Length: 256
Image 1: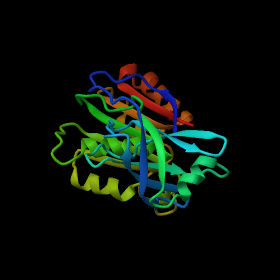
Image 2 (image 1 turned 60 degrees about the vertical axis):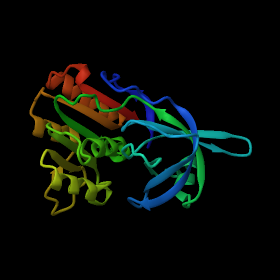
Image 3 (image 1 turned 30 degrees about the vertical axis):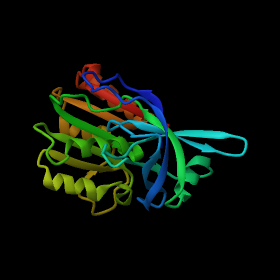
Image 4 (image 1 turned 90 degrees about the horizontal axis):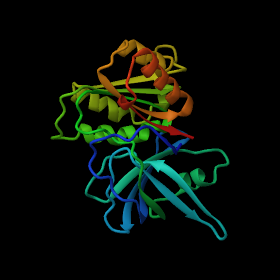
């Protein structure tokens, strides 16, 4: 899945966003998250230092003999000093770019431009934050949470992650989020299964319903939404129509 370019209002009070430039990166690590979802870690080797903000995306380029293809992918990691970044993506049946990336072996190189986008955490953090994602919409959230919960990072607000998927085995980065929740008492991880098996003791249904359950029309937090258009639109309607949110409290990115 990738950003569609349809992003919510631009958060104010941000540090200057890095200027998009062209780079070349080499794939250092590839691992399966599910049977159809990959986590790819890249290291920039040409183009200078790659600076980005958690939540932004890159636009990757695949050049053929006659055609050039580009696809945008959210960065699924926090900024660091090692010139690395990660993405996660689904293998799309018949999809040229997704199958190419999913089949890559470590050592392969690719060009990209970036960083792009304004889907980043508004600073300073003055309210509790609710991150609401479905599927690979979790990618930018992973980077945002890693930044907010980094060792030494000041955190005096509660952070919630409502993550909707179908089955337990498709809860991407589940162990990471469970570890974060175990070590940070202000971080609350709430996976939501739409097709929960017998014996599942967590939340069932969809993130829209779980949002109503856990927040009960609260207006004292900000929401960050990422996933397919239908989910994002539904949650925005709930927040504005039922909770009475101001639009500036809602930050979102829709996926194709």
